[in-house]
Image 1 (cartoon, rainbow, N blue to C red):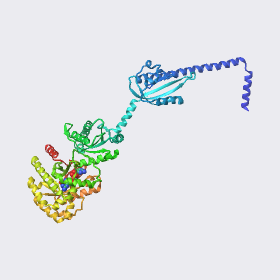
Image 2 (cartoon, rainbow, N blue to C red):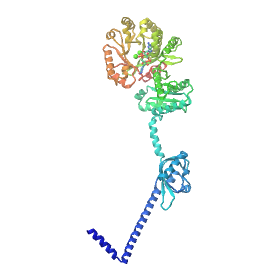
Image 3 (cartoon, rainbow, N blue to C red):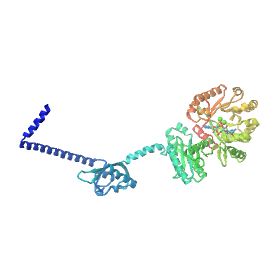
Length: 603
Ligand code: C2E
Ligand code: CA
Ligand code: CA
C-alpha cells in the first residue's frame, strides 16, 4: 500500500514539473558526466604513466610491433638484452633475431596461436646483435584496439641463459664425479649403450676397460683422504691423456675407473692401450712432497665377441678385472668365457703344462705376511703363476688341479720350492732380515714323493736354513693317510722345518689328529676373514680358531685381509699375522724387493 502511494506521488510530481526544473535536472546530469570524464581522463593518464614506468624500468625486454610485425617501440631492457639500440630495430621485423635453431614449423605454431588465442608463450633461441645465440622466455600478446581494426603485438622476454646453465649444471653434477670431473657410472651406462648402438650399425668393435687401483684403501687409511683424493685426480688426468679423443674415461667407483675404446681394430690394440695405461699408472705420484706408487689391475671385455649388451660387457670386464687382481698387481686380463668349452681347454692346458716347465713359463709371486702388531713383513708366501704365451697370466686355481691330476704337480712343486728357497736366502743375506718362506705342498707331492729328501736337497742347494722354511698343507691331507702324514711331518719337523695348516676351517679336521701332528701355524681361510665384521658365524669361527690355536701353542695367521677393519679386529683378538690385499697382493720378486727396501728405510 505504501509503495503504491510513493509511486503515485512521483508521477504526480513529474506531471507537475516545470521547464526550469527540467533544465536544472539536465545541468546536474551534465555536471555528473563531466566530472566522471575528468576522473576517467585522470585514470587513463595514470594508467599510461604506470605502463610507461613499467615499460621503461622493466628488466624484461619489451617490444611492440604493428600488424605487419614491424617493430614500433622497444624498451631499455630490450636494448640491454639484445645489444641493439632502438633506432637500429625500428621498422624491422623480429626475424632479425633469428638463431636458425628453430624450423618453419616452430614459427608457424607461434603465429597460429596468436591468431587463435591472441597469445603465445614459450622458450625460444634468439640471436643478439653480437651474434651470440641465447635462450629467451618469450610471451607475445596480440593487442586489439577498438578504434583500430589492425592488431599490434606486445612481446615481453627474459634472458634465461643462467637458468639453463644452472639446470645443465645440476644435470651435469648428477652425471659427473665432482673430484675428478670425469663422467660417472651413471653416464658410463648411457654412453656405453649409445656407443654400442652406433657400433652395431657401423659394424665396429668396442672395448671396455675396468681399472682398479690396488691398495687404494690403504693409501686413504694411512695417508689420509686428501692424499687419496689427489691420487685419484692425477690418475684420472693421466688416464684421460693416455687415450684418443674418441675414447672416454669414467670414474666408475671409489677406486675404479672405466674406459670405453671406440672402434678398435683388434684385441692386440686393446692390450697395447692396457699396457700403456699400466705404465703411466706406475710412474710415481708426487703428493704432499711424497712419492707414492699406485698399482692397478685392468679387466677388458670386447664388443661384440665377449657380450652384445652394455651390461654383459661391463660384467665381463669386471670378471676379467677380478682375475687380473688375483694374478697380482699391474696386470691386465681379457675376458675369458666361462669355460663351457672347459674340456677342450683342459686338454690343451694339459699339453701346455708339460711344456711350460721346460719353456720356463712359470713364475713365482711373493705375498708378504705381516706382523699385526708391528706391521712389519715377517714372512712370505710363494704363489705360482703361469705366463701362458697365448692365454696370458693363468692363476694356479686353473692349472694346479690339472697338474695334480696328471702328476705334473711333483716337478712343478719342486721347482717352486727351489725357486722360493733360493730367492728367500738371497733376500735374507741382502737385507739381513729373518724372513720365513711359506710354500704350498699339494697332497700328491706330500704322499707320493720322497718329500723329505727333496726338501733336504733343496735346502742344501740353496743354503736356506730349515727354520726359515714353512710348508703349507691342508687339513684334508692328514685325513687321507694319517700314518704316512704323521711320519713325514715328524721327519720334516726334526729337520727344523715349520708346518702350517692352510685354509683352516674349510675342511674336515679331526682334532685328535691335529693334536698329534707336529704343526706350528694355523692359517685362517679367507672366506671367514672376509665377513668377519658382518657375519656373526664367521666372527665366532675366527675367534674359535684363534682360541684353539693358542691353546695348542700354535701361531695364527689370517689370510685374505682386505680392510683395515678386518686387520684391527684380528689384532684386537691376538691373531699374530695377516696376509692379504690390504698390505699387498702377491707380486713378482723385483717388486717384493722394493717393498722390503721401503720397509727397511722406514725403520
Ligand atoms: P692359497 O694357498 O690359499 O693362497 C692364497 C690365495 O689367496 C692366493 O691365490 C692369493 O693370491 C689369494 N689372496 C691373497 N690375499 C688375498 C686377498 O686379500 N683377497 C683375496 N681375494 N685373495 C687373496 P692364488 O695365488 O690364486 O693361489 C690359489 C691357490 O693355488 C693357493 O691358495 C694354493 O692352494 C694354490 N697354489 C698356489 N701356488 C701353489 C704352489 O706353488 N703349489 C701348490 N701346490 N699350490 C699352489
Ligand atoms: Ca697357501
Ligand atoms: Ca689359503
